[in-house]
Image (cartoon, rainbow, N blue to C red; front, side):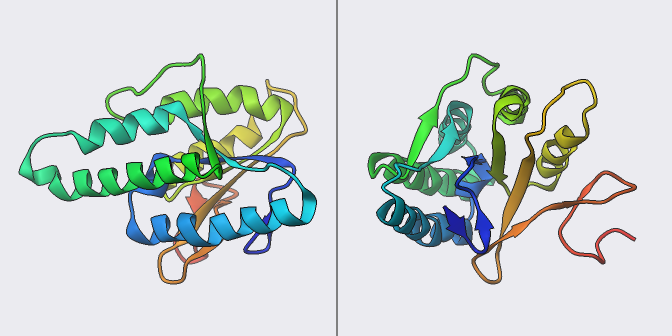
Length: 186
């Protein structure tokens, strides 16, 4: 499956919870991603779909019921995101993937997804779509582990908010931090 010039046909493609928490990101998922999957399925007969870790679903569920006016905007985004996630799943463009690993910790699913990624990358190429720089950094650094022998790669992407297109996170060689733009890290 190709999307914005990136080929995912040999990858497990995962979505992070923040993929559902922004309007431009949700629109990208409902439009560009769905169209790319539909085109790929039609041309290959494949049943390709994206994977949503169960902990992502749990995180969205927790955020959407949080009380307090300070989180009203976040709760609204979580409700819209949860609805988008459910639509992708019911229409067959995504599936919820279960894991035997730790669930949501302190309201966040990053620990569970990172644990899951350690195992997945031993057997498959894995791509993740997230706009969370810290999470992208941790995911990209999995490729640098010396104790886990594999030829499989982890790739991480974000959706550009100005124009709904997928871009790859890059890992700064010296700082080992994810950077989006060359001038972000000096």
